[in-house]
View 1 (cartoon, rainbow, N blue to C red):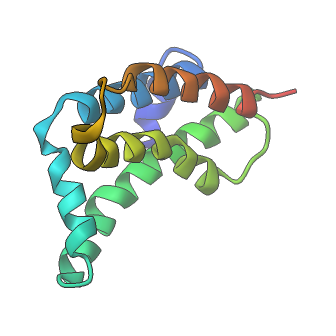
View 2: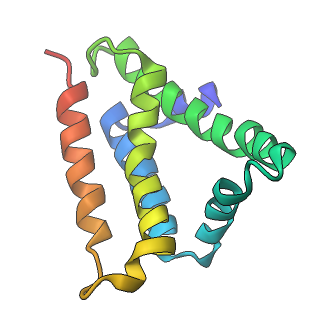
Length: 132
């Protein structure tokens, strides 16, 4: 994965924007978002499933974001942060959308603007990561 990150021709901010937007579009539109919600709901009853999901899905996603953050720091594009914490911040709006769509959206009077949530998150995150 490291080679793929390094091969991206743009800045680390552009790469982060691409990955979060792509994942955001999936979470905003896919019916498969019920799977992680199901894992969350049933983790206590099926710990092996939760452990599998943690190892195969979550760990890989966090590794991707950690790699992008490390790439940005190494290039002087991002300030020094704990990449593992910043990686979780990258995932936060995706989880909010997932939980909102599968639990609370049915009670909204108007559909929530997930796209603007993603864009606002990206602006805030990238401003916070920007090297001084």
